[in-house]
Length: 251
Image (cartoon, rainbow, N blue to C red):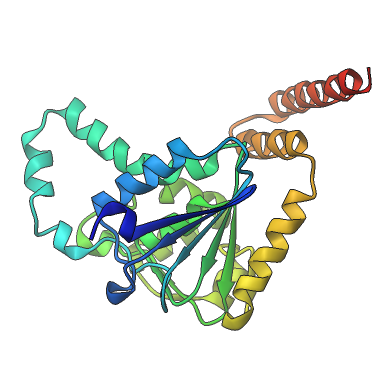
C-alpha cells in the first residue's frame, strides 16, 4: 500500500477531507502515513478553510501500528545523534501540528476506537465530533512511551493536569459520553449522526468571514500562554487589523 492509499485527500472547494484508509487494521498508523499527513498540510490549497479528519471503517484509529516498534525505527533512532533523532521525531509531530494553523479549522469525526496516536490526531483538531459509543484511550505509557504527537499539552489544556495524568497513566478507556462530560469531545451524537453533525459544524464555520475566523483562532491558541495584559493587547491588535481591513474594503 502506498502513502496515498493509506491516507486519502479529497477536495471540495473550501473543505478538505482527510481519511485514514487502513480499515483492515482499524487505521493503525505508520511513519509513512505521518509523512503523507505532513505533506498534505504543506500542499493544501490556500482556498481551504476547513479540514475534516476521519477513519475509514468502524474505527477512527487504534494508534501506532505495533509492527513499527518491532521494526527498524527504534534502532535507527538509537543510532542517530540527538539533533538528527529529534528532527526525525519532529517530522512525525508535523503530521499533526499543521491542523492547529490559524488559517484552518479542523474537525475530527470519531467513531469506534481512538487510541494512542489516534486519540492524539483527534486532539490535534479544533473540534471533535464523537459517536456516543466511541472508545478513547491513551495507549503510549503502557507501551513504555509517551504521547509525543502534541497530545500532552492538548489533553492537559482541555481537561486539566490531574485528569490528564489519570487517563495517561491508567490507560483506561473513556466512552464518547464521558469524553463529552470531561471536555475531550466538542459534541457527542449517535454514530449515525456523526457525518451530518460534522457537515453542519463546517457550514457554520464557513459562514464566518475568513479573516475574523483566523484572528479568533489565533487569539484562542495564545490565550493560555498570555497573561491578561498580553491577551488584551493581542485582542486590540487583531481588532485593529479587522477594522482597518473593513475600512480599506469600503474605499
